[in-house]
Image (cartoon, rainbow, N blue to C red; front, side, top):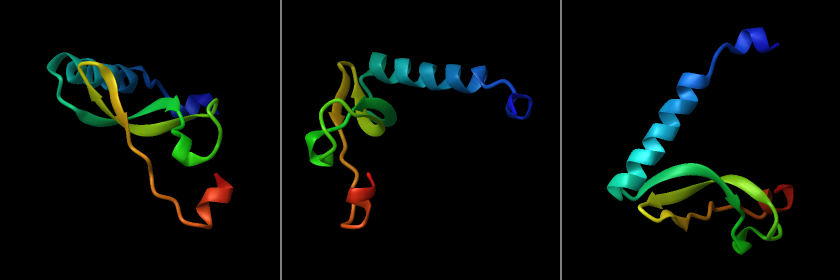
Length: 76
């Protein structure tokens, strides 16, 4: 299966470079990063998701909470 995927190191390095540039320039851009889920997700404090966050010179400045409907929350 891995022979179909190919090499992804360039994609990873581009994403890292974008994150570093955003931090150095304090650009306050939104990136999906792995973080502990905000309490508003209702899944506990030890659950880590890839969630949209505002990235600035301090790193993660703010985690954005994705809206969920009554059907989606129990599935989460």
